[in-house]
Length: 184
Image (cartoon, rainbow, N blue to C red):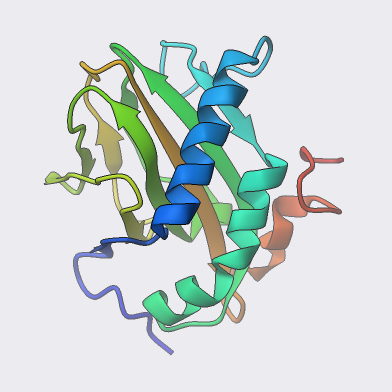
């Protein structure tokens, strides 16, 4: 069965999160960012912004949005992992395609202070307001962000694979439990 993303391999989803979810996750990400002393992203950006793989709260969001993602993509998906980052002034995201655990992904704006900051997918600029998401075929489409000129932008990434596809073995990204690091 073919997914419903069509030829462009992505679609913007206004209000992927409810206003209540946005409010909770915006506050959560700001608090976690302020208390972060050891979890920083250095691979996709030289900025070293706060980032968390397999965060307990964002993993709970990953699991709770599984049915929504099934409906949006038109396939039965298995959740693999979540990730979130607090981008700060001058942050960027290098142009890339994702690894097999990210066959179908959604990036969601959790809240920001500053300016609209587009994500680019296959050379198309997409602006996400808090709560908006963009669902995309992460292994197929190049995506990136140019330098951020605002104060901060909290972004969650939820990743899934086709239950009946070649990447189904990436369920939970090899983790035994939700809310844990790899091998945890």
